[in-house]
Image (tube, one colour):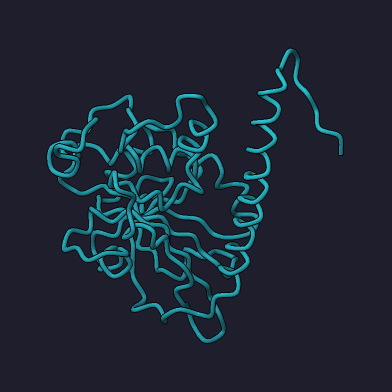
Length: 239
């Protein structure tokens, strides 16, 4: 295919852009290689227990939801742990940005696999926050009454509200097994950001296309206050 040239671009620009394009091709190929290796993973550990979650129904009552029910008609489940505790005034701003995107994508995703979000906050808190953010499609459940968030946090912690990780599970005739987790969480960059869920987070991917890039911010700016997170979690890491 002949390379397309944009209006008024210089030879210097095209040479640099073509060199970058070759790197982008290699990156695309590497992404697919990693995805193929991920698909070939053997089963991980059997689900530690049949966790029971809580969620608010469309009628406004709170119901119990068994882990297995999160799969719906599917054999695979994407389960994102959002940082949000019972004592928090608002969830983590980064997690909120991620769930904003998951909510919009969930209908298409659930043509193929189940998708849900779990947090340590109560079911009523999650329902209230969902109303504020317009999360009308994503399946939100509370894990405050079980140990799921600690068992599958991806790092050692005693506070389930600090779990922020994507886990994937698969259901087989022999039971439910863990398949994959965003374990880059425990291998952060020098600036402290692990970028472990960048692949599902439009914000930073969009900014990476711009001349200024994503900058040095650890968390994105939001349109709401998050005092608990800022004081007890973010601390002096604020930009």
